[in-house]
Length: 54
Image 1 (cartoon, one colour):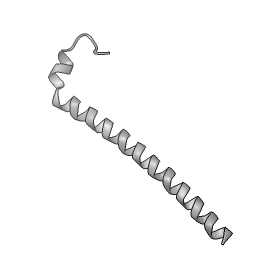
Image 2 (image 1 turned 60 degrees about the horizontal axis):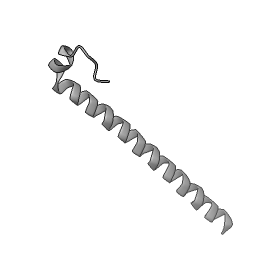
Image 3 (image 1 turned 135 degrees about the vertical axis):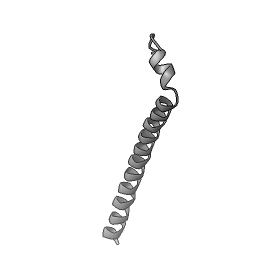
Image 4 (image 1 turned 120 degrees about the horizontal axis):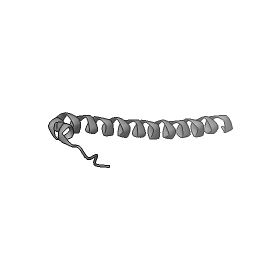
């Protein structure tokens, strides 16, 4: 019984870690995708801009 519960615990921990990593990965990909979409949508404004927005 002890080994099975230990396996379950390690499995749940690894599952939560992988799910968190996947969420982080999806967020990063989504953010870069949005940035690319924004860059494609307004190329003329970005090229005409002389002062950076930062």
